[in-house]
Image (cartoon, chains in turn yellow, purple):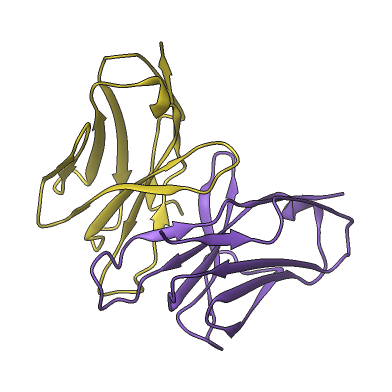
Length: 113
Length: 116
């Protein structure tokens, strides 16, 4: 049973525009959320995270928004750059529970120059 | 910089063979993990280890075992490889809970295994 879902397997965006990647989760015990970025033939790398006590976290061009009532988070990239083209994985965990990450299925972002 | 290395980038094995996938991290992390990545399924946790000699089953442990004899090394073993174990295998390590950034896992480059 997939507890973290990314319903869009792919997304194409023009360079300079905003990319919005979405993620939904079902387990209300999750209290920490992360986004990882993965290039082909490489392991995922950590991008940005957010605790459930916040609803927004920003780091440069990347902003993550959390809507706890909707069990939804999103990653905004603005402006999008061709180097952002990768697969993005959303992940969640329950910090006082098993403390293991649950990953979504990933969204492949293509930024068109 | 944290470095997580995996012994092979690509591996081809025959059905029934015993397969060892090795992972080494150089940052003294207590926690280590093995995942497999498959299209449409994301990353699924196979096994993890919170310390030397310790191991815990993840979501899909069937057909796999692990070994953690040293802190820096976490091995994944396929006792008798099958074609449905063809996948990308990713190892990760994590800082201990007491330190800032505990939730961040650092991944190796992955091993793409093909079982014929």
